[in-house]
Image (cartoon, rainbow, N blue to C red; front, top):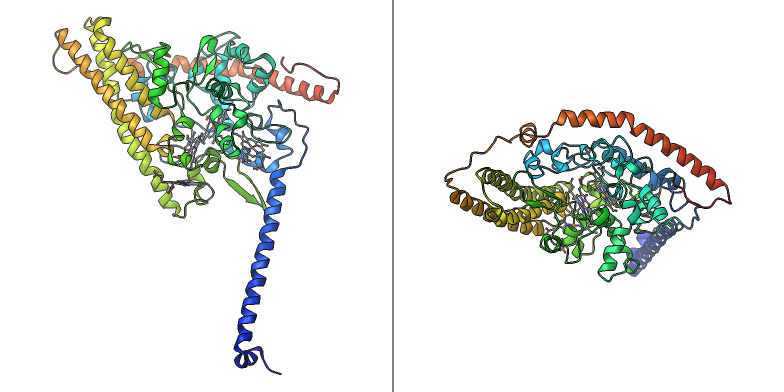
Length: 509
Ligand code: HEC
Ligand code: HEC
Ligand code: HEC
Ligand code: HEC
């Protein structure tokens, strides 16, 4: 009997036939496997499940029963150990890291307390705990309106559905403390019946409507960013604390400054310089749209909620976090560079932006203190008005760049431009103040106080941290447990009512 080798030796074309047919079989097998995986994935994505989730149910567990993978990854946000060079999910006292912010935010809540965010899982708890929300001991107490809850909880979706947005915003945070209990979760981004993405909160849709656009017309890929843009945006409180995104003139720092100037809007008057200030919130979406990833069609979810595979099932990772904790899924699906190289790319951009941002901070701190000195020497409003307008604009540009925590990576060029313009305005403000000082007979340097640490800076602006902390402690011990008790009761009643087929009406207590 001849071996295959012998046969091929005599008839070389047979070798080619064998080779080519093997290749064809391998190719066909490959196609088959791919189509099986594809079909399984498509099956998973079509989620032909019909759930009986109530669209207003604010509890992640209620939704999670149907979607254990998404729920389990969501619940991993409880872990706050990851820390990158500047960001991550660890709670970090940013005023301690950067005491300049105490002076810049003097007279405003952020000078009391400003922590790096820990993530969606903690959104409600963090609002209760921050010194910025004070210690409201009874319903109706200040300092903050209910509007503050808006981007913290799907309980807000439920309340707005019931009472309307205007009514909700006109309440105080303390009026609704017992209603707001569940952190950001499923109902903030999903329709209940088919789990498609939705804009659950009204402000974004209202903003687009003002600009003649209808959110229902946006593509699926756009929705993978727009669900985030419900909250990760610049906003302000208008009449009766109505939540508004100031996008009517455009989304750059200059466009929004023009918007605020036209309305004569100020969040607060700075107690040292007396400048009418605008607080930037977190224009993450706006800044992102000026960056290269947005321009190449990449969405927020691509990096912060990449796909994950478990047991052959592909699904969306719901642990929303710094992508640096997940480079393989977040970046290497598109980039073939090493993990170390990609991290370096991110840190390089952040380092460069922080370098110039810090320069602007230094100038701004001096400007506020020098303006304070000019007032003390008897400067008039007329003498100071130009300088104050410049301080307002310079600090707005700084804050626009600082408050968007991911911005130094999302769009470094736009932030460098914005900070550069801020520096120009801040130097101009200082020049004006120097001229006023000369008119008042003062030449030479202004004697500046030592505000180089959080403690010193807070003391200088008159913050009594111990008192604030003691009040907060009382609030957490005496008031919050009662809020939690009422919530537990409501949620139990809700489950009972849902079992009653005839129940109609409000879920609000
Ligand atoms: C309902 C409002 C809301 C929506 C919708 C929302 N976020 Fe957030 N996000 C927040 C708030 C509030 C925080 C800060 C929570 C805290 O730390 O207490 C936060 C924090 C984060 C953080 C910081 C996490 C960390 O570990 O430091 C990231 C990243 C983030 N969000 C990304 C996203 C992305 C991406 C989307 C869209 C897929 C999104 N968010 C949708 C409100 C929202
Ligand atoms: C901040 C917004 C946000 C929140 C909160 C959120 N999701 Fe999602 N979810 C998304 C995005 C974005 C996708 C990807 C959708 C797409 O591209 O089709 C997604 C996809 C899904 C899918 C489709 C299958 C998949 O994995 O891609 C399911 C099911 C799902 N989420 C369930 C949940 C559940 C359950 C919760 C609560 C525990 C939840 N989601 C919370 C934004 C969110
Ligand atoms: C869905 C695909 C996709 C994902 C995911 C993605 N990128 Fe990119 N990235 C791009 C594209 C496209 C460009 C533009 C490059 C081009 O067009 O040549 C880009 C550009 C860049 C650049 C150059 C930007 C500049 O300033 O010029 C860096 C750095 C980068 N990406 C890093 C990352 C990192 C880090 C991650 C993960 C956190 C990531 N990318 C995730 C597609 C992606
Ligand atoms: C190309 C990948 C990519 C895209 C797309 C992207 N981000 Fe980021 N994002 C990052 C990286 C990288 C960081 C920096 C993380 C770090 O330094 O730890 C970051 C940081 C953040 C942070 C701060 C995180 C923290 O720990 O405090 C938030 C919030 C955020 N992004 C939200 C968004 C939103 C909202 C969108 C869409 C509008 C978006 N990102 C789009 C890669 C991306």
